[in-house]
Length: 129
Image (cartoon, rainbow, N blue to C red; front, top):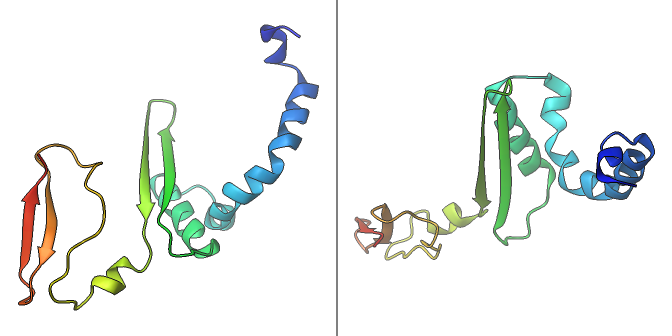
């Protein structure tokens, strides 16, 4: 089958859909509960799906990366990713002499970030070089 024919072939579409069904159910379906119940909320839809994902997927304590994509009427779109690191805030809360253990590699040069909280709970910041 040539490329042009493959773009409109319904049988091929069904084959690919059936091959990807289990992956779709595992990776995408957990994020669709709120959207399914509420319908389109425009801007809020993306974040509602994120809430669905977080509430439906059990977290094992290992940070997860989630891709988010949103488009508006074909005019503009945005794509970004989040790293979900459950319980980090709980571990850091009310902890003196705390040093964050997250990576700064994704930060842009010149970005300020929390580098330490001392024993008096004073925050210290650094600048990414």
